[in-house]
Amino acid sequence: MTLRDPLIGALLDGRYRVEQRIAAGGMATVYRGLDTRLDRVVALKVMHESLVGDNDFTDRFIREAKAIARLAHPNVVNVFDQGADGQAVFLAMEYVPGSNLRDVLRDRGALSVRAALDVMEPILAALGAAHRAGLVHRDIKPENVLITEGGMVKVADFGLVRLLSGTDGAVTSTTEAGTVLGTVSYLAPEQIRQDPTDQRVDVYAAGILLYELLTGAKPHTGDNPAQVMYMHLHESVPAPSLSAPAVGPELDAIVAAATARDPQARPWDAVELLATLQRVRRGLSQTQLDAEPPASSRLTPQYSTGEVTSVISPPVERTSVLEVPPDLLPPRPPVDEAPGHGTMQLRAVRPERAPRSRKPFIWAAVVAALLVLVGGTTWALSSAVYATVPSVLGQSQAQAQAALDKSGLHGTYTEEFSESVKAGQVISTDPGVGQKLRKSDSVKVRLSKGPERIPVPELAGKPLEAARKALTDARLTPGTVTESFNDTVPKGAVVSVSPGAGEQLAVGSPIALVVSKGMVPVPNVVGLDKDAAAKALADAGFKVQTSGLNLFGTGKVASQSPPAGQPRPQNTVVTINFSLF
Image (cartoon, rainbow, N blue to C red; front, side, top):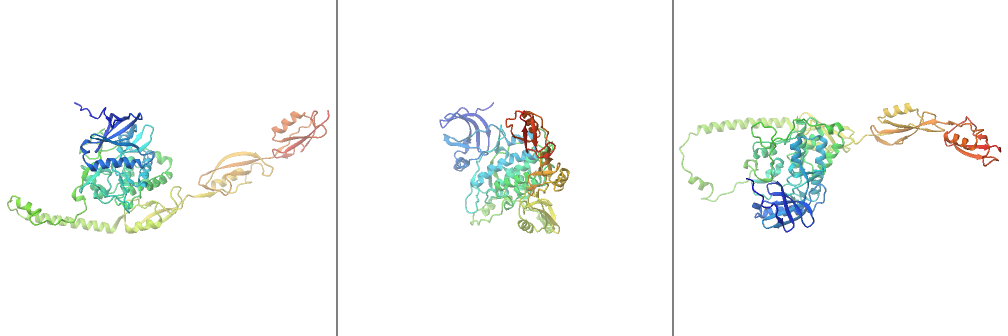
């Protein structure tokens, strides 16, 4: 038996008619509705009735409306109104027909690099507008990215939005100790640790989302949320190219930087991440952009079941209050307990147990100590010998060297031209970001010299084939060739080029050439009447002028100047004289 939703058909605030349930989340249910006053379709986000009495959730709901009202961006779902009707606290929002990004990933799996960037760029543009307005979304995930039927990408659900405050722009969690509000697969480490957070939690989630678009899977999975939290805290996101070989090292570096466990190592905000992504995109070839991901890449469930499944949709992760295991939280100072309370009182009421032999515990302690000692020694030796290559993409040489020094590494630097990376900034490293390297070895750092530009050589007067060879030798491309009569440049030689000589162009730029056709012999028009003479001269490219006694030209042409047969450039004026009869 299906229970009918009591809100279906209701008229909220005397204005919004609830028509159809669209989706349900951790804090609210979304309906399609009709604004009867303006006669337009809207999305109605109604807070769960069980949360209406919670002032914190109600304030968060109202804060979402005010936050989005501050944004005017085409990639953000607009909020039109906020209100309450009895136990229904709601937002009236822009209705976006289509699907969400989770539906797309479920249907298609991993996307091509071009499609992934086409989705990520508007997401980062929306987040960038929020960050520059002092807002942090804090719940970026595929379920909160809507795609219209026309392909427009819109970021929705600013339900966990926070206003940046203070001199450092940080916000603190309003959830109680030991819990975190959000979606576990996209939580930044500082959210789990309950440290002060800023806009870089959105950068981290965007990096996870980019990995998911490129590979068709989430980077961190486990049997329960606690395992996923542990991986966020202690394991770096793997390079997407390990699962999708078509992904180049540039995108590996971007994912590594965006998902760095240390927020200080991430791009400052979504605007900076978007700029880096666009710069890298300009350097990718059409083949790299359109390379299809492996056909087998499909989304995997967030929590493994231990069984092999097929054609089973992954569970939708809802935004919820998650309990953080105490061993994942930073140690807190012990609280002094008054006499007669706390631990002492609990021990007094425990039933007495038969004494046990302490030997098994002693041996267990010895074995544990040995394991800790061996593990600690191994870790110490590994840390002394190896280091992880940090992300230095887009940094100057001085910044890159400082980051390498901090990691105990040193670099060797080479320069090369780049059309997408600003001069003086790092293009890439070898080994790549996140890889282990002996501290005795050096990281090969490629620095940009900026875009390479080549001057157009001087070609005027050169034969056509020699001009083409000169362009090829200069790494430019001979372009279209047109011909023109010229009285100073020999036939078959270059008259001019476009762009002109000396202009600085990118490698491979096409150069159009104008080649001389030389001069034209003046046709013989003596003995012709006026019309026939004028036509013959015009066809050859000359201009006509009459002179002599018979100005009306009623007779035949008696003479011409220049004489017939002389070579002259086109548009030369030929004077013709007519006889009287």
